[in-house]
Image (cartoon, rainbow, N blue to C red; front, side, top):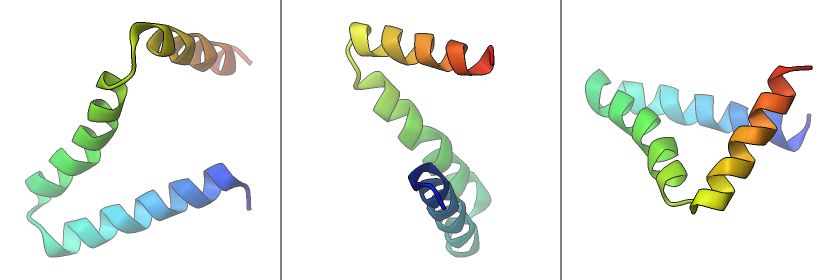
Length: 60
């Protein structure tokens, strides 16, 4: 299993645990808010690079 697959599997497991322990709307805020906060902490050059790489991968 690749490193990205392990991270994705861990994220799914964490999301399921959050849904069991917390109300659905709090779990949703955490699942959406953490990646959004991480994106906002990037500077403009890093955001540009991230968008460019994402577009290249989608174009394959």
